[in-house]
Image 1 (tube, one colour):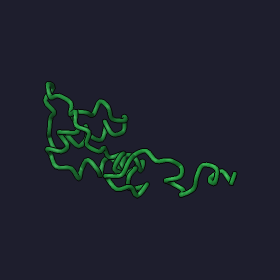
Image 2: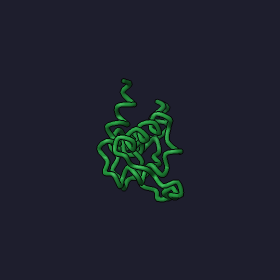
Image 3: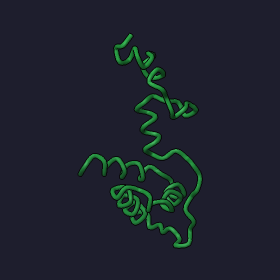
Image 4: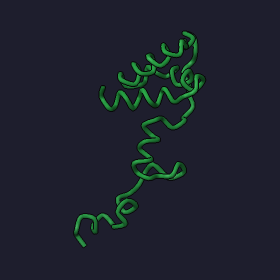
Length: 99
């Protein structure tokens, strides 16, 4: 089994039924591997998303966003946009060795 597949499987298996149902409303926007794993987890739990269920419109952090923040060691309140100086502590010229 591929690592990405297993990561999605573990993530969805760790969710409560209500959380899984909530994210399943948006599964059409997921990458194919995630769609398959959500569908599999719903089948395992014998859950069905109502056909007329509206997609969630909240801007809750996605799994990707959470992982990206962890990788960057970013706190949830921190800005998403950073200048090269913020990241390296140097100005653009210093970062390029021009100073």
